[in-house]
Figure 1 (tube, rainbow, N blue to C red):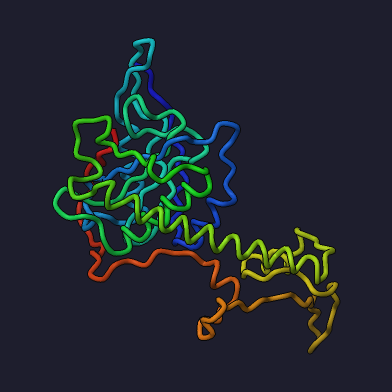
Figure 2: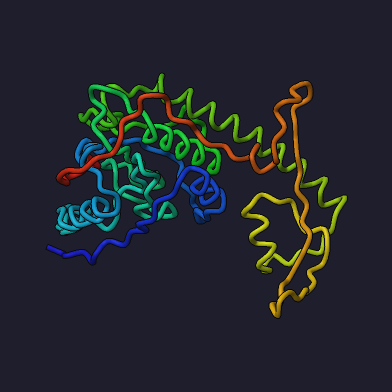
Length: 287
């Protein structure tokens, strides 16, 4: 039996806004994923989830799983796992989404596997777990240009109930589709405003400058002046003016927002969401 080296995982947790920005900037390589699979962990359940500790326990579990390659050679330890674990505390990055993971036998090539933390055979996901899931699914479908109706469930190719008997495509896909539609609407608005800003304002941009990088992270449109130095109380400062924008839908005059607020597409959890707790860690229902 061939013993595989320790699995490499990301291990970061992101909130919805940061995950959307991460996915939109993510390079998926010359052959990007063409399918997205939704799973539930079953175990650990929501009350078992302990964030990074549970994530590392999952990694250790996968590293002891046996499998046989196409040539019939036995291996010990998966080389990858699911790409995301989604819980009440955020969206956890596991295996790199630019590469194949492991989630469904025979359907791991050019596919992404997303695990919702919990057992959803009796009740559907809710709270932040579901809100984070809709955002993750929406962002990935938008970034990869995939139709939401092409979303796959583990049980499509398995006798398992995953992602849970209480989860149906008729319930999931319209919510993801609505997220993508709203995101594309906001992106179109932002792009139009950005084009106008480039025509009207300062265009000599240094993308490596510290002030410019922070301005983009905060949703500003671009610099309105050169940088200059000021001194105050023996301290040197670099100063630069930047452009912001307020927008309002015509006829909805009480809906004035900053452009960065309008473009901040997140999904709000429905009332009565479940919370994370503590408990023991047991294997996920990934393969």
